[in-house]
Image (cartoon, rainbow, N blue to C red; front, side):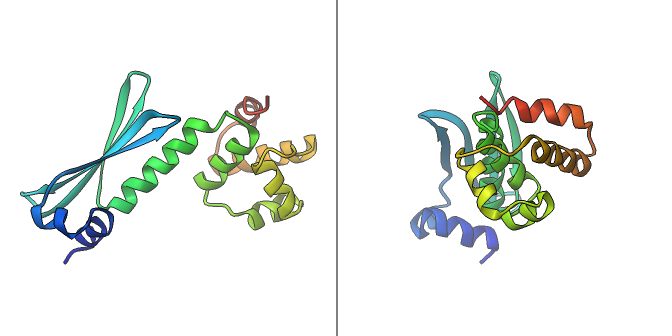
Length: 159
């Protein structure tokens, strides 16, 4: 049994696997379909194939994945990206997942407490101006982009 088959059985059950029946999983935000994962048996390779669609600006991005887990992770990142300007907390959540940072790592670099990071993520408070700039510098360095672009992007999340 392949990894894909195990993943598929875990998600859809043995009956669907035995029938090799295609499955469509829709991803929604606030009732709107923003993407879908299509799982089907690929006769050519003799295994399950996973395709993801993420709907944007009247069109969609389309990718193939080697596992259900990879497809779900991709959709998760797209959801975060979709909401990144809803609030500073959503932006911070997006950045932390994009660069695989945890609260301890970020708090250590910014010289703040983990509780501060928690409060920012939950939109209970905002960082000081100095910390905001330090965060922008960190993102610009890791992303190899202009700090002014990062500052504008970050400021769009503050309402």
